[in-house]
Image (cartoon, rainbow, N blue to C red; front, side, top):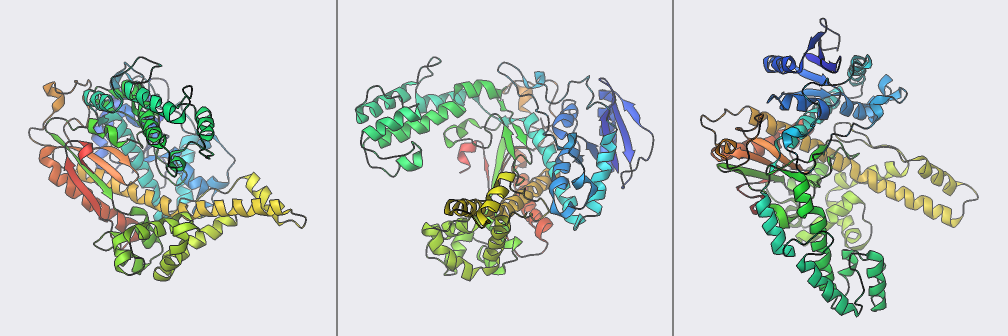
Length: 582
C-alpha cells in the first residue's frame, strides 16, 4: 500500500491512499503535523510505503516528533534514476520535456555556530506543510510506476529505487542523530598536533615553526608556504624543477626542505578542514550532523554538503567517542569493488580467489602475480584503465587468469569511447558525454582533421572510456552498500529495546536534547563512507549488532547477484573510540 504525502497549505498536510498501481483508493485527508505524526505511528506497521517528493525535506518533520518510518519512495531521487536509465529509455517519463523534477533538490539549511540541533530547520518547521499543493505529484508517481513496469528488468529497478529511497531515510536519520563527537578531546588532539590555538589570522606554533624551517632551507625569508605560486617560485629558485606544489610531486625530490614542507602541508590541511573553526561550526551538543546527499555522485555514491564527513582524517578520529554505556560497531567491506567486478562478470575464478580470504592474497596464491601489492595495483589498473607503469605490465597476467572480469571492464571502456552509456547491476546508467566531446570526436574523424585534432579526439575518447569502465564497478558497489545499510537498518529496528537502556542523555553525561531523539535508547547508524559503517549501540547489544551487520553483507550480495558464489567479508570491530577501529 502507498500513502502519498503532499502539502495543501502552510499549516496542513494532505495524505492520500493509493493502490499498487498508484490509483487513489479513497479521498484526500488533510492533517496537521501532529495528526500526521500520529497517523504514521498507527499505520507504519501496515507495510505502508510513504511517497513524498524529497525525503531530506519531509522526513525531519517526523523525526522531530520522535517518529520513524520503515520505508518510503523518494520521488526526486527515483525520478533521476528513471529519467536516465537505459532500461527506461522508451518510457514517457524519460522522454518528457524537462520539468521541476529534473531540478536539483533544495538545499537543506546547515546549522550555524551557536545553534542547537532542535533550533535548526532540518527540513520544515512544525507548522509548515511539506510542499505547496502540486497536481503533478501524483502524476509523477504514476509515471514512475509505469516506467518501471514497462522497463527491460522491472525487478532490478524496483530494488534500486527501494534501496535509493531507504538510503535517503538513513541519511536523514544519521544527520538527525549525529555522530558522537567530543569537542574537548578534539581540542586536545589539535593542540597536540598544531600547538595551542592562536588568534584568527595567526598560525599555530607548530605551523609557524615549520614555516620558519621552510624559509631557512629555501634561503628565502619572505616565502609564504600557504601561497602555491609563491612557494613554487621559491622551490624553482632553489633548483627544484617542479611544476606544482602537490605532495605527490614533492615526495619524489631529495632536499632538506621536503620533510618540513610535507609536514606543513599535512598540518595546514588539518587546520583548514577540521580545525577549531570547523569544530565550532559543526559540532553541536557533542554531535556531528553532516548533511549526506544520497546519489550525490553520478555513480550513485553519496556526497555531503559541508562538514567534510567523507574525509575524517586519522588525527581527529580520537574525538569520535561513544556515549557512556554505549559502543561503536565499526565495519568495512574488504576489497569491495574487485569482488563486485567478479560478480558482475560472473568470473568464477576471480570469485574463488577471494573466497574465505583476502582477495589480493588469493590472487597471489593462485600464481597470477608474486606480491599482494602487485595484485592490488593490477586490479586497480583493470578498474581504472591504467595502461602504463606497473599496472600496464601486470594487466596481461590478470587478463589471462580472469578473462571474464577483464573483458567486462574492456567492453565498458569501448562503449564509453563510442559515447554510449553503460549501466550498473540494478540499472543506474552513465550520462552521455557533452556536446563539446561530441564535436571534438567529429572533428577528429573528418577528412581534413589535423594531427592535433586526432590526438585530442583520441585522448578524450580514452578519458571517457576510463570513466565508463569504472562506472559499472563503482556504481554497482554503491548499490551493494545501499542494500547492506538497508539490511542493517532493518535488523536494528527488529531488536527489542533494552529493559533499562543506558540513556546517557538522562544522566547529564551528554547535553540533554528536547524533544527526545527516536534513537536515544536503541542501536542506530551514525556514519557511512562508501564501504564502511558505524553503528552506535548500547554496549550490551554490541555482539548482536555485529551479527546483524555481518549477515547484512551476505544478504546484500544475494539481493544483487543471487546465488553467484562471491564473498563479501567484513572487518567488524567493537570499540569505544573510532580511533581504535583500525
